[in-house]
Structures are given as C-alpha cells and as structure tokens.
Amino acid sequence: MKKLHVAILGATGMVGRELLDILVERDFPIAKLTLMSSARSAGNRVLVGGKEYAVQEASPEAFQGVDVAFFAAGGQVSRQWADIAVEAGALVIDNTSAFRLRDDVPLVVPEVNGEEVRNHRGIIANPNCSTIIMVLALKPIFDRAGIKRVVVSTYQAVSGAGGKAMDELRMQTEDYLAGREMAANILPVAGAPRHYPIAFNLIPQIDEFAEDDYTKEEWKMVRETQKLFKAPELKISPTTIRIPVMRCHSESINVETEAPLSPEECRELLRGAPGVQVVDDPAAQEYPMPLWATGKDAVYVGRIRRDPTVENGLNLWVVGDQVRKGAALNAVQIAELAHKLGAI
Image (cartoon, rainbow, N blue to C red; front, side, top):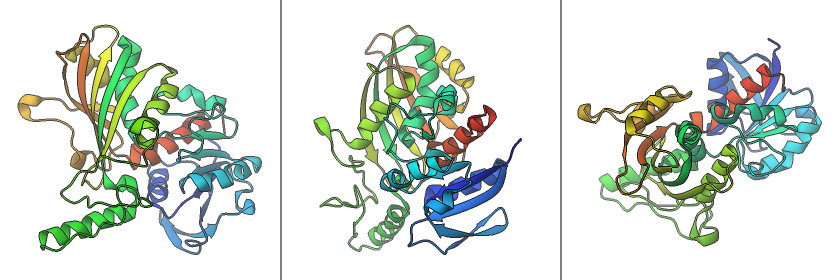
C-alpha cells in the first residue's frame, strides 16, 4: 500500500492529538508527517509514535507535496486554508462545520455512506460529533424499516467545548466541594454575554441560538443527518444539553419507523451493524455509560424498548466517545477508505 504524506492542521489541539494517536494505533501508511498550527503554537514539539516532530505555522509552502490533510483548527481556519491545500494537491478531511452542507462537498460517516468518498473534489467533511453518534445507531433502522420522525435529546460532555471547558469543570468541582463561589467563563459559549457553571449543573444550550430558538448544534444534527441519509424531508427534533461529564456524549433517541420493528429485531439488527455495540440487559443493569465508552471506537446502544404512545415507536440510549469516533477516528476512517478506493 502506497505510503502518504500526511498533514494535520490543528495538531496541538484535543482532536489533533487524538488524530495522531489514532494514526499510530491503526498503523496508517505515513511516509512523511507535517504538523501545523497557528503562530501561537508553532515551535512546539510533539511526540508521535516515539518520534518527536516540530509544529510549524500553517503556510502555503507547508502544504506542498501533502497527500491528505486533516483539518482540526476551527471553521475560520479551515475556510482560510482548505482551497490552498487542495490546490497543492492534498485531500482535505475537515473536522469543522465550514463545508458540511456544501453541495459539492461529501459529508461522510464510512459505516453509513462510505461510497461518497469517491465523489470528493478535494474536500471531505466530517459531520458533527453528535450527528455521527446518532446516525450510526439510526442508519440500520432507516434502511430496514424507514423512519418517519426522530426526537433526540443529547447529554454532551464538556470536552466538546474544548480543553478550557474541561479545566473549568475541574476547578468548579473543587470550588463547590470547598464551599467557594464557582467562576464561569466558558459555557455555554465562550463569546456569549453570560456564562454558567457546569459543575453539578446542566446547561440546555450548546452553541449559539439560531432560527426558531434552536441552537446551531441542534440544526447541525437535523441538516447533517438529512444529508447523510439523502432524506431532506426526514423529521428530526433535537435538544442538546451540556452535562458535567468529561468525555463521551450520550443521546436519548425516540424513533418512529415507517414499518414495524420490534425491540428484539432492533437489537439483532444493531448487533450486526458496523461501528455499533449493543449493551442492553436491563435485568443485569447493563446499559451504555460514558465512563465505560471513553477511549473506545464503537458507539454503544442500549435501553432498546417499545414506545407504547405511537405506532411503530422505539426508544434507544446511545453513548459514544465524541473526541474519538465523533471526530478523530471518523476522519482517519475516511482517509483509510479514500486510500483503499484510490481517492487519494
């Protein structure tokens, strides 16, 4: 298998570091590795597979000769550098929302619509982490029984808001337990006029509010799922919530299917689905939880049960590591598939 010149833009961030770990774990065929960042982080040194690499500031010259470039530095940075990287000959796999809904950019979860990697024009978009976790559980159901409507509530870890949010949760927990006032500067949105503590709390806002008083995060789940399933009329009603968990997003999903699908049939269907593991034994108190899913590749599904209030209704509880499968792992899997299919 041909080895590739791989670049990571945003190499010092949480997703960038996870990308590096996964590339090593999965023995991705790397001939050369170029790590890039903003000017602020340039000059840092990063250990990758026992070898130290210097992080350089992103520049047009840095993309010369690159085969595949993973972008994990924010939407504005992706918009600034994506076309430059493509013009230099790289396939850009972008982990931001910058290109996800563009008609000429494939939005890909390999287990769901991997064939779309063939259709790229230089950029492939990684979906939102909450979307990835949801669609892995829903796509087998969609294919087997059709879906009329989805109502989903997410319970999202603070790591989804970055390392500073994780630090704030630690500090707030210490302050709360010591009886001190908790300082809040990050959540729900760093640039918002008001901030709230997350320790021992829930915040029903992720990202900024948009049309119909749904947040941008909620609209991402709607529009990205419709694009992934090629079902623009699919009805999805989301509520996204930040919770005081360090890592792994959880989702309570209510699905109304077109055709009947029993809980037993759903379990069996999901047991055979790629990227999914069923953990569902109520009698033994076995169900997915964030602590057990952290650092794992799979998305875990449990609490599969009938919704007696509607015809053909099911409830699911889904948990996945949003830094891993919800971001870095999905990006690497896209690159692996593109390489296998000759799309790099």
